[in-house]
Image (cartoon, rainbow, N blue to C red; front, top):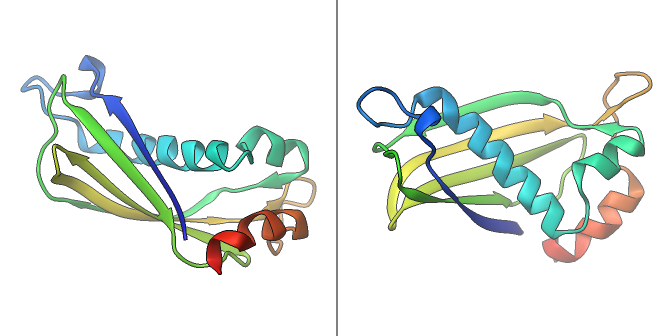
Length: 134
């Protein structure tokens, strides 16, 4: 399994007038989690794009459990439980002091930057990820 946990502090611009995080913010926090996970693996998105691989979003699921507030430090836990094929599925948990704020999932498809068509996970990525799925 792939796993990353990162923390961010809720910024004023991410909240409504009551100081509660706007529901539309969570997908961008999921992106932070994905980016940090790949960076930790030394497989940054920027390098994948240079190699002609893109990962557009094909599905987004969010379940809201409780609010997060301006000034909270939240943890974004990102995991991948199965070896990717043509798609990669990310699971997320956003918490504040162990209190579950949001859970969710995104599905990204591997596509060729040149053809814009789906491709299987490239061999070098499969090789880099495979030790995490033994």
